[in-house]
Amino acid sequence: MVTEPQVVVKMKGIEVGKVDIPVFESLEEIIENGIDETAIIKKFNKMNKIDIMNAERNKHREGKVGKQKRNRIAFNLLTTEEAQRFIGNYDGLQAFLESPEMQKRVDNDLASTTAPETAEAIAD
Figure 1 (cartoon, helix red, strand yellow):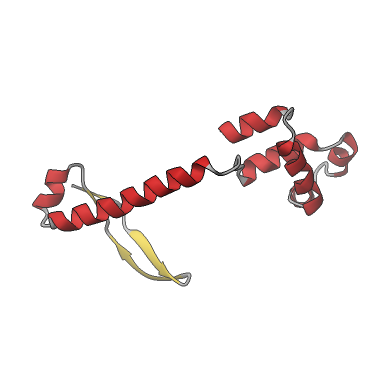
Figure 2 (tube, helix red, strand yellow):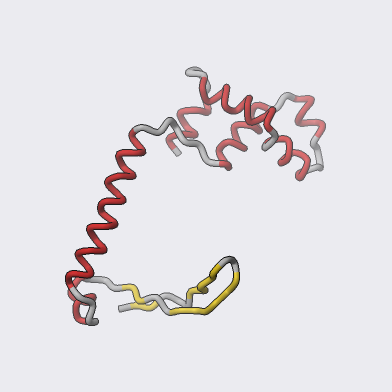
């Protein structure tokens, strides 16, 4: 058994303690440490159910694109004038990339079937 470094426990954003988390490497090791087999099975079944349900949900989701990928697509959609406007102003550029106007352009790009960035963004 290995122990992770102390993990901070927070409640409503306030640190309430630190705990050591044991990391077991085999089922036998878990049982040797006194953890009841029925508890192991119960926890496994619960997590397995969640994994199976998430896998089914993922089949029905449209291509989900994370914030970083959306920002990359938005950056690629910038016009020359827009890019020049934000030279040396990273915060302004970031705010513009996350603006509703730019996000609408990103959504349109993702919705188009010819968008070169779309397949790559969804696959990453």
